[in-house]
Image 1 (cartoon, rainbow, N blue to C red):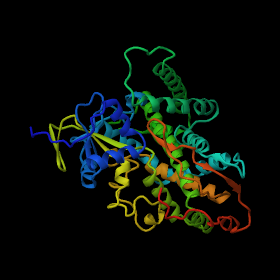
Image 2 (cartoon, rainbow, N blue to C red; image 1 turned 60 degrees about the horizontal axis):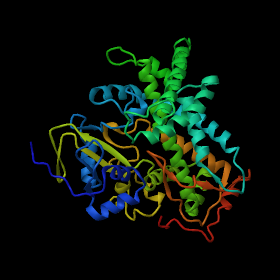
Image 3 (tube, helix red, strand yellow; image 1 turned 45 degrees about the horizontal axis):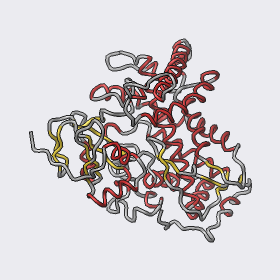
Length: 453
């Protein structure tokens, strides 16, 4: 075995270092400034771990096959279940991924746009005018309802039950996911006890939905992903078990609901502080375009990544990763914040400038809000569609007023980081007269797109 070579790192206790790798990015920047673009960290129950942000090393890691590096052993499967994509490795992960990719692309994806727009119009109709409101709760409801209809195929009683239950599961599960499961204190009223009680209730609801779908004579005409899972087959003709379907549905909701909603709240927060971009986006919506809107979504995800890290674990006896020789079991953590903050990859990286992506799509090993390689989020296209439709609908129907207030700070929500004030906005219902909303976006006295944030 080759001699292990690892970089330097901080000497603080492992629990503190583990928290620092997940919480908002300024702490990671301070570690980078002190130790360089790759540094060693201590994590509970993991002997060796390092954080990387060197572009070449990140690309090498994400391009490595599952036989070389795979998912970190300590992951979200503890709350999402053993059938979750987070729990599966190697060929099992590959087989399941091939089964789940088709519903998130092409014709089926386009069919979901109407549902997302319906949910957006319904939610935005409740917005008060000319007074501040946090947009994040609304974005949460939009993405939750859209996923319940498109992914779960929920309606009636099940829709109401899941709408009430799932936000609580996601919030509590997000907080518990990074904590060890205790040997004691797992009673009915403990955090883990409450989570498992909610999970049992969720499994019972999904079981009812699966039974109802299986008995539906028009199952093959349905577009929801639950129905497609029931009909899908592995290469050997086998089906997904009901427990696997339940775990994957919860995974799709957890990975797509809160992260998409939080990115939308960040989008509102960024646009209010960049009125020139906001004005141009409204003009583009009125003209039926989408290039700047898509570039804006990409730039928000670059400058305000909702998830801070992508993690892999070495599966071979020795791995040469750039300058470092890593042993089996070593955890490699990619800091999304540090990669996105790299001036070499993104000139003047500290500036919010969507125009950088209008004519140049990002390299998917440098722009990594959805991870990368064989474990890149399979719902990335679905999430992008949701954000595009919600942003288009909001700018079409409402004037979003700019602000000169300071940028909202990042607030940790467990696994994700959102705007501390919830992406606060002040809006007015747009006039039906063409061009009126665009005229309402004055830039006098407000920051420009060159603001450092």
